[in-house]
Amino acid sequence: MKHRLFILVEGEDDVRFFGRIIKPLLKGLYDSVEIVPYACTKREKVSRFIKSVRLMKNDYIFVADIDNENSVRDKKQLLYSRYSEVDGRSIIIVVMEIESWYLAGLTDESARHLGIQPLPTTDSVTKEEFNRIIPPRFNSRIDFMYEILKFFSVPEAVRRNRSFSYFSHRYIGDENLF
Image 1 (cartoon, rainbow, N blue to C red):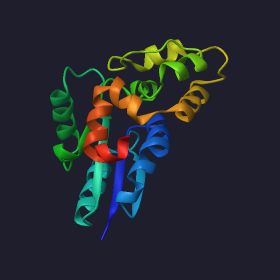
Image 2 (cartoon, rainbow, N blue to C red):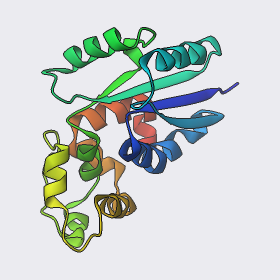
Image 3 (cartoon, rainbow, N blue to C red):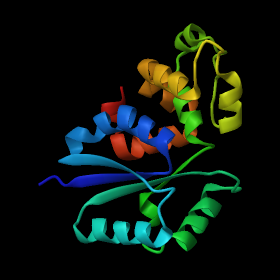
């Protein structure tokens, strides 16, 4: 019997990305895949939610940006101290921020079509850098993000971002990537 997967993400940009790109890739592996934002929720409530997911024998992925931490290990340590129930094997750290994953999925051709310079790697892209490259023709960063998702290529993202590649190989599997 398949069960449910909960993907805990920080905010709305993550919800948009995981809902549009990741959820369809994982849907066949679970009865349901739910995206749950946690950034504006009290730590104790998030920990209780994780505990209930585990007690119901469901799976979860806890996603967080690396932010200002020096390493994935340091970020995981910070998360352990904040969320008492989180299991390290269920944590995925996005390097640098979710915006880097958005841009990773653009081929050189689709990047040029959107009016931005192609990036060979997006491992160091921050939210601020992402905001700086938004072409003026887009009304908002959200419009730009939706447009990127229309062109998103998982195999391209695997090549251009190491943390996306790690996530993809771990949860989606090579046979579903290409």
